[in-house]
Image (tube, rainbow, N blue to C red; front, side, top):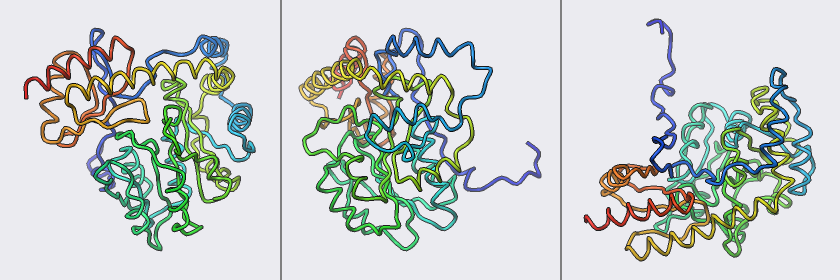
Length: 355
């Protein structure tokens, strides 16, 4: 780059988004919360049929997939906006609704892209620490609202802690939020959330028009490599999201894969149940070993390993197990196949034995 080119200080100061390490063929990748089962056969067929046509641009209105999503969740198609993953839709929300001097509130630690995307949009991030039991501190989040607040993100189940919000506490929180402030409920892991009384963003939207629900096809549906996510909101917010969206980012392959996925929900549920069965098994094993692990409502676990994090991560990687590590805080361990999970359980048993 030419030395005279002016670079934005805020961009130079941003942390790079850290993708889960991509290990070698003999290693186990449990760092990105992916579905270990692979795409469903009918979805592969749908994508294969589209291969000969990818010399053409995808439909920018994406009415077919938006209609399928709307029917699936029980809303009007005008309420559906798409992006290349729900992360991109979160970015659309920030660009559509916030600008320089505005504030965006989110829990912390939570999805690390919130912090990055807020600053890219020119807004001011307002991270609110989680409670001691790793849940959203909704009282502190409501207290953080100012006349500059434009967006508030709730992540349930929360990434990376796996804790979920309940309907009653979210309803109580929404009463405290001014009607002109948009509350985004990020439900990327909703298929794995089986907690009684868990908040349902779609149900809340019916009575709270300032609510936006984010969902994705990357996790339970197993379409992470194709990149497609969506927002459900009021028709007006949805229209604004489509106005700021980068054209053609949701490919024809992704659109058809999403439609095919929605058509085989029974098959999806079977795969989700396999992951939930493994989740129960892993929790029991890690608890037996003595790890500081809480029940999770997602497809991952949070190990609050604190100052011992780097040592434990080193033990895991030395045994070919790659999790997501935050130095000084903890480790997020994704749920993989039974064989992959066995490798992780064995590596963690070695790590705790060395203490």
